[in-house]
Length: 204
Image (cartoon, rainbow, N blue to C red; front, side, top):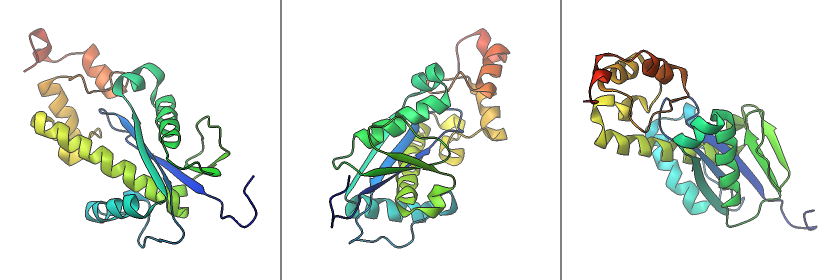
């Protein structure tokens, strides 16, 4: 129950990284401050990388509260990507320094929370708080891919961010399946079941 005269605190939640073949799935939760609006919020997928990188620090600076959490590759393989995504979202909401009155989640499912929650299809285009969460989740995950790219430049992760492009699949065939790959995902699993020549010895 929200006290009379107090503005309800709405938390937007979104994720990044459900589709890629590698890395964690990242979720963010954001409670925006109505007194400090942020111009230009939109679904992160519809924004340029430059726009996302400009907006992310503004969200961190002006939001009443924000948090980013993730579920690991091991959790994705053990739970499946849907349940791992719900876990990351739950962790993000529970990490907030301020408790929301309601949680709005992008998509058609909500994680199990102690706070009332509502799923909104295409919510990242409709609700500013979800848009903000999508931007934080996307920028954090992209940075993780760039960091991995420094260690494993042969996979091109900074370019495709782990998604199953033709170039990415060719790189996995050539260089092997590293520990950061999701072995439960079909393209990775098929390579492991039908290994190329590199599998006869050590991965290059």
